[in-house]
Image (cartoon, rainbow, N blue to C red; front, side, top):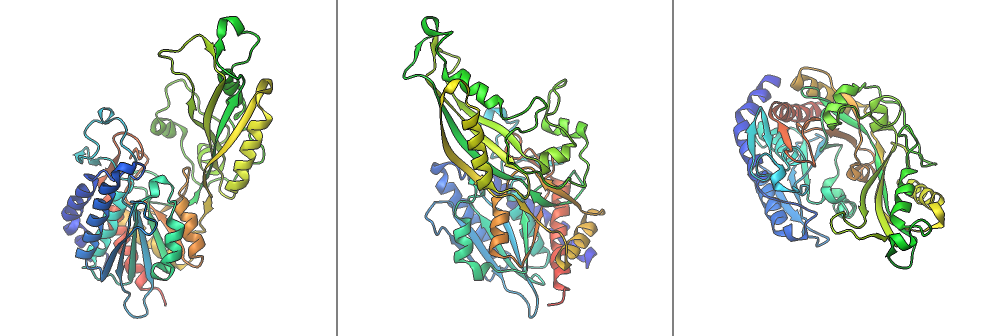
Length: 449
């Protein structure tokens, strides 16, 4: 069966890649309210592809009226066979400045064995991998398959919980495959088993009633921007470890992440040391991180010689698996209030929130998955952590506590530059991922009911 499916995936690969290219050409940016027609077009194309692949029923749902529709496709199970839910998302990050890309972000381009374009790896490759797996089985997979392709993952999946509640029975499954992560390296398949959470806030510092002359009053009157800089500097100690009290750390990862490899992948400048203590995997998967995402302050161009009365910043925490996002956000707010310098006034506005999650990678479904991915890649799967938050994983775990949840890569690797310029997909690993998923469906069909 492995050779048969390998040949089927290889035979279907040109058509799968053509469909992926067509999806990438649609600028389905969920963060842009003006892109609603493109998201609708992306959803329609996705639904059409699964319908053509043999789905008994497809539907496009936008139950909250957001203009970011999701696609559902149903392949009923043969008698006494399990059902698998395959997840991906068709929305993408904004492209930013197109001139910063080597080629237009929404015009796919192949170079050096990679497919370049916004959404190639994150996560239209997930849609294409699901299609490839179903097509490899001739449109009649050996298990029940329900496909959910979301349209708002890149803005935090704000209505996914409502969708899961409303479609609970229709989406119920014995296993959930979330194809929205990365492999550990090219050719090294990975299951993401821990995910950091997210807690953010906007802090505003007020020092003066109004802007005043820096020459006349500077030296005695405090300015808000300098106070804000001093406050933000308290988020880390001198070694770069997070200094916010009350945050937790998780168990040390078993995988070693070489520092030189990390420096290259993170594009750290020569001579600039890494932050924090401990191993790299520890720092990015098992410990909290604090980042100043943005500052509202006068621009350098056109700045006047004046003391700023107010200044504000958005601060984000990445939380260790096992922490609680609500408690962590309260700890961050408390830290910012307690460390305000010079008696300046501090206002806190709560912002983004996502719970961390831990997947227990054990049981018959994970055993079947490891066999499938080993056969497809020619090597064992590595269990890794995820430094970024994927809120939907906790949403699925809460909705379907009995289902095994696999967080997989549709071919993305650490060099794919998801969310950055020149995003790309490693084409050989994409084909491996397609084969692995086709083999997984077959492996799951052999499990006892």
